[in-house]
Length: 98
Image (cartoon, rainbow, N blue to C red; front, side):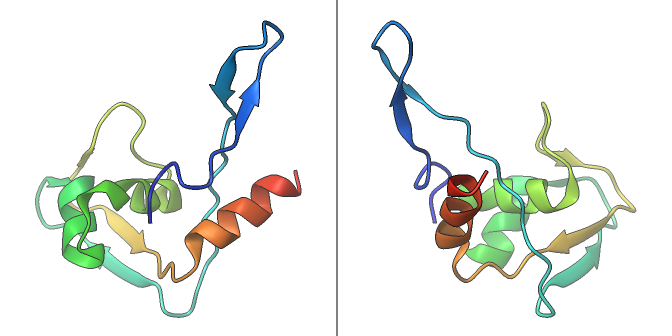
């Protein structure tokens, strides 16, 4: 999975190519994992532990409303670690229908 795999390239009013805004809404899944942090954690380290890819931190951030300006998660935070088998397809379909 790549954070920008589903981002559409569009042209602005000056005919310059730009990336369109991609909205990421992670659906709930019965296979999602819930954890409670016991110490200060980083989203990229959690992504590495659960997805084996540090660049997938945005999935955890999006599912929990985190990551706005920092990758740090405070201790005692309950996090949903989403099960995201076809996230690129889901994001594409979600953004095509908005």
